[in-house]
Length: 97
Length: 245
Image 1 (cartoon, helix red, strand yellow):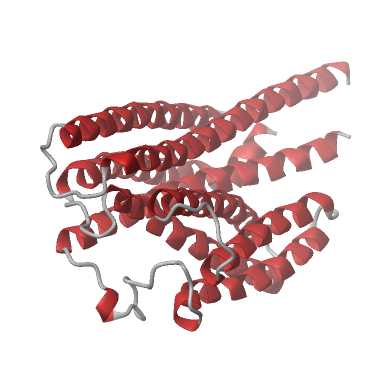
Image 2: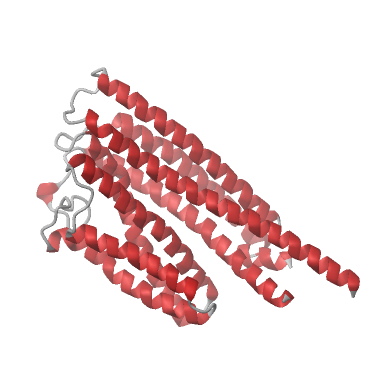
């Protein structure tokens, strides 16, 4: 049980970190866009119209990772409940016999 | 009962503590490297002159491609080990890796497609590199479907192993596709058979790509360990259910 609880906590931590990374990424992209628009980034060239594509790729990648970790975390929770139910069933069986 | 699950999934208290440390370290390293990679991609590396801003997709697309191809090799090796030794742990490793492989193969296709749309104006073309990568995605999905619909136990694992071995043949074909055929996909500019004429200009681009690849590989190992542990727990729970019923 400790192991399952530990895994769930670690996965929650991962999920929160992924969310933070997502927010960080969004703000970084926004900053990059502002820097680009204000001429701070001067060497490019074809750039601004391509920023939404760049933003989409980074958002989708992190969203997929976040979704997958969330899925694993949910399954871990279900398994934890299943183990609890089995423990109760075993205790009932032992008390009857 | 719970003890059985814990022992099966983590190898006892000693194994558990070592496993915990390894996981925490991997997770911490991934998180730090993730922040460093984002900083490098958005603020440190210069914009590539010919491809413009969209070239920054490269720092995600290439590592995802590397891990997508690596995954099918791991699935194949683990499947062979399972066929030789008959041990369930190898099959659990193959299954967990295949699930991650689907994730990475999907992201290769999606990120590549978006990059092509932004840079070249189209989402998809039936060229050798793209098509063989799509074949890899179908192989991963096929593997998981075979495992889902075939009988539980060693028979299903054997069917899956055959699919994995076919998939392993596809990985070098994907890598060499731009060498063997004329494709719309850019030439290889990293790796042992990369054309020197197509090499990347700036060393900063190489360093960023290297850091990004290391970050994704660390994250991949962390996710694989998590998924593998969960798979072992699922197997242990199945056994307990069978005993109960």
